[in-house]
Length: 324
Image 1 (tube, helix red, strand yellow):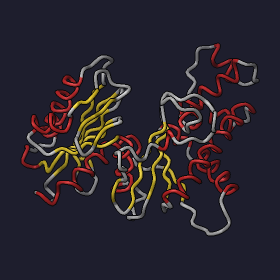
Image 2 (spheres, helix red, strand yellow):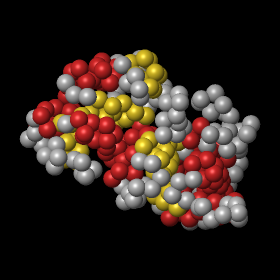
Image 3 (cartoon, rainbow, N blue to C red):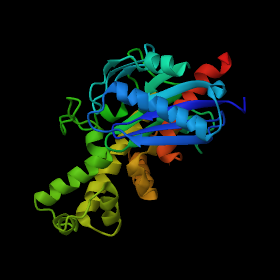
């Protein structure tokens, strides 16, 4: 089926990305546009259609080359019903039957899944870490997303909400989370949490180069904190060590819950590279049990910001290739 493609769609709170993807995981053509504040579901679905058709035209392909469509979206959602139940960062996205609405317009079968699941499947299916072994992905960005792939299948759970590792509790009675709980991993190991915790310390008197940067109006990112930590800023070093510690706690829990061959770290925070991986591995080793060496490899993601769109297409290939 080398002449066929799947359409992969990655719906985010700020960007909509579409790609045509071969069965090898290679991208043939792509298109993207921002998601504007206040855009309604109908407008964004129309944009999905427009970008899909634009990509086909750019690749000099017609509809007959498309085996199906995969969409990765923020949740919670129902994969079995193809419905987005409620997307917190998208206005009006409550009980939207995206699968059926998009499929009717494009005339193609559509599979809908959580964006974390799509990214995880992308890394499993087409990433450098692909070897067919079980794996768990953590995406460390504005929040902490995740996905679990066991036996070549995305784990969705009875209520279709598995893989929300960002909302596992790593600090009981800890920081309040937007989900309504306290102590979620997302509040300690997301890129935005790193910045928030670092600046809270500066505001309460911790000595750090961040104070001068903030006064000058410089943009402060998680990478800023990581760089200052590497260069010897004591407060940033403390924040970074705590971040790596909490990620290691999550990896220990993942080890004993899913027992995967690999835990993959992606998202914006992973841009710190070895500084992140080495820190997490150090704390993971210190906390690992001694009964049996079933330790997953902790590695960086390889697909970058393409993981979601490639994974969405991969889910379409998995679901629909046998029917074409």
